[in-house]
Image (tube, rainbow, N blue to C red; front, side, top):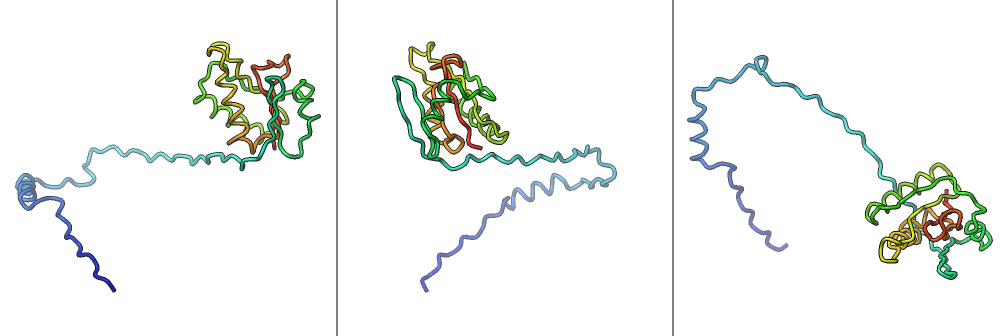
Length: 179
């Protein structure tokens, strides 16, 4: 066996001079009786342990572009189902309005909304994100929502598409939620 390194001796927390000064300072003191203490007992606050909701594993989605409209579908979802979603034949059971949110604020709200929708067994939801008219024509929030739906949140998605014109068109995304 090789040599083990020599262990350093721990330094005392206080030097002998500091200890002597402390003992001289408290030389005439008498300890308080525990019953005479004027301390207020603070009740211990019990905190609830909140489970972080975990996203299901990512699922590959087939992405299709059709004249500026985006749609994506998981395996087992046919084009007719996506077409029904795109035309508004499948009605949204809930809506999340992200207008005015930044991407940083919107994505956690979207994740929470999709998790709740999956838990509540909603079949279809509508995510309103706007068309990007106030961001120099670039729909930053729409792109972030669609990236999240095809990426980290894809395990919650059967399919999604640009919403029907009556539901917001390019300013909204209709999502079929995976239960």
